[in-house]
Image 1 (cartoon, rainbow, N blue to C red):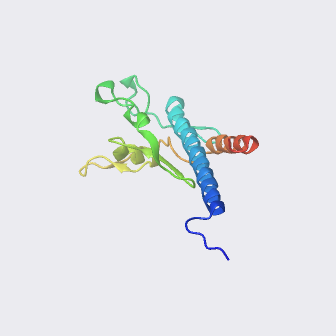
Image 2 (cartoon, rainbow, N blue to C red):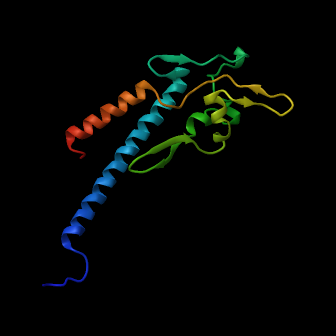
Image 3 (cartoon, rainbow, N blue to C red):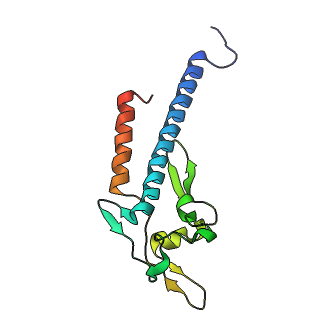
Length: 154
């Protein structure tokens, strides 16, 4: 009977393989996140949310601004909300996409149509969804996964 000190070479190889698989899954999750980010940013160009078809955003009350909906004046950082869409976290099981920075404060108000404004004059912001699950995004993700399976996760 032999006694070995240290780690079994077979278990080390299995652990190394497992780490490699986890690393590949994290890479795939990053790609999935990029798909979702690109789709959300494209919704700003569409001026609506793409699910199976484009759900147009409600127009502004004042139409004379000459700029797109959800894009503030250039002197106040126009496009800040669109630029704020980032990967918040990523693991081998999940990727979270959201807004970071100053825009995160009002991103949910616009995306979900929540109460906004000052305490003395609150109002309900019209829902102008730009981020969330959609048929189009899911289809692109499924295509990515199929492609990765065909390539053997390489």
